[in-house]
Every structure is written in structure tokens, then in C-alpha cells.
Image (cartoon, rainbow, N blue to C red):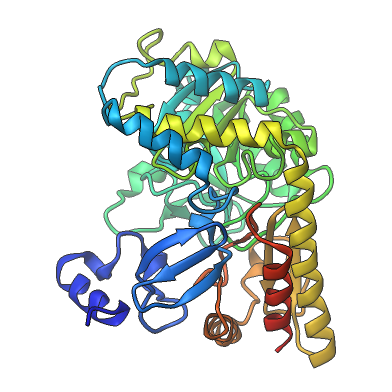
Length: 421
């Protein structure tokens, strides 16, 4: 019988590492990954016949849960008309209008196929707009796997970046500067030295790729102020936070307006689609209007746009959903804290909206270095305890836990019970 273990062993023969994205390999927690057969609402089902309450939610975009009937029905109808045309459709305009209405900072938007493509294109556009080459990113923030962003900091605290992957020439990252997330001084020093040459500062307004780490009070406003001072483009990477913290994203949540925004697959209900956008004068630099080239045959395809339109319409019509998922996440966060106190174990929980992380450390986690103090061996034990009890959380310490509208009170309570074991 073909089970997850057998399928993984077969996949290893045909697919690098047996997976099409590294975290799926369970490399951080050991063992064989689950091969999922189907999903519905807040539950997923593997090929072995197991059922789990899902807190991965396709890494975020599943805010309505899996297989929402309204979305599925609309997609089925769209498929009958054809999967893709490589030509404009009305649905591209409808989705663009929903995005720009939700986020007023986005005056014009371009649809693409992935978050990586969105951030790569946004940075190229910022460079084309400013005529500058350098960018600043933050250690621990992840913006996809394009060459110029796949970097790590060097030995010095403030430095130009070095490649974080084989196959990336050092010349590709020489214009990428690395600052410390939640550290204003690190940004200020870089801008004082390089500011006239910095095209953009790109930031996850809530870091969610070193675990969930919210911004310190005033940090995002500081970034807004210093970029205005130097004529630098401020890019919010809202691939995780867009339409999840609030309908208007992190920029609505914190009341800070960036120049450009990148969005991920939540704008396609989880299907392969993404977007980048911003001020009209910046986006008008993109071809065919301007000289910044970017293209994609499948960009804005009618199936993904259909799923996105239905998803965003549902979220727009139900603002109470955001209160619901925030309350559910708070219950989970409280359960973690209660368990840690009763068992006298080190644990720090960060929760904001429907995003949370339980770090296996006694330190306050507010930056990359403090996140790295988490005991990953302890996380591995926790992961398997949760999985053995029917709860699917991220198979890596430094990924977020996502709550969806589909998570019922009963499933939240069941999860709290398992946390306390």
C-alpha cells in the first residue's frame, strides 16, 4: 500500500530531497513528511488515513480554511471557460479593484505568480524609479528566493550582504545591505552612510519567517520617516500579513503607509498568484508604460483570480472574521503560557492577530538573535506530540502558526487540551 513513507522514498528518486519546497521535507523535525490527500475547513487528511486539525493553512493563505464552498464553486465554473488565455480578462481588473480598495497605499497593482516574483519585481521597480542600486533588508526577514535577496549578514553587525545559497554570485548581493529587525540604530547608521544610494528598504511589517516577531512600538513609523528623509522607497512585504492581520493588512493594523506593497497567495485564495503595487508614479515605471521590465504569461490567470475575488469578497463582507480569528489565536497563546507555567519550562509566545509562535526559550523574542535562542530539539519533541494527537503545526520552529475562520471552538479547545499534555 502506498503510504506517506513509501511515497516519500519514491519521491526522493525523482525530486530533489523528495519535495518541491524544503520545509516540506521535515528536515528540522526528522521523520518522513505527510503526503496530504485532501482537506476541508480546518482539517487535512493524509494518504495514511489520518486526520489532523491544520494550523499551517498552506503557510498562511488559507484564512477561510480549506475548500470553502463559495470559492470552490466559483473556480469550478471558471474552469469550464478555460484555464488560461495569456490575454487580459475582466477578472484581473476586479481583483485589482478589490486590492486597491482595501489598501489605499496601492494606487496601481501588477499581478504575478508568486511572492518571490512580487518582491523581486517590487525591488526592481523601486530601483528603476529612484535610479539607485542599493537596498536594505532585515536579518531574519524572508522575501523569497531571488538572488539579490537570498542573503545573510556577514561577521560585522552592519555590513553588505554575502550569499546565503550556493549558486548566487557575490556580485548579485553587493548592493544588499542588512540591518537588524526592530533596531532603529542599525537602520540609521546604514542610512547615514549609504542613504543617498538606497533605493528601497524592504521589511516584513510583522516578521513571520523567524517565527512570529511583531515590530516594536514606533519601529515601522521610524522606517516611514527615515525613508521619506532620504527619498527611499519603503516596501512592506505583506505576503504573510496582507488580508490576514486586517482586511487592509499590516499597514491598516499599524497605521503606517508604505510606498509599495507585496502580497502573496491569499489574493488568490491560496492558488498560485501574488501581487505588487504602490504609488501611481512608481508603478507607472513598469512596462509597458515605463522602462522597468516585468512579464508573466500566467500572471492574473482566470482561475487564480476567480479564487482571489471570491476570497476577498467574503473577507470584505465579514469584518467580524478578524475578531474571531484573533480571539482563537489568543486562546491558543494563553494555553501555551499556562502549560509553560504549570510545567515550569521556558517558553515565549508571540501572538498578533491570527499569527502566533511558541518559542522554546525563556528570553523575550523580539529580533533574530533572540529567536535563535529557541531550543529546536525541544520544538521537535513538541511537534511530534502535537502530530501524534491529531494537530498539524509547522514542521519547523521558525515558521508561523496560522488560525483560520474555519477553526471551530471545539477544535480550538481540543488543541488547547493537547498543548497542556
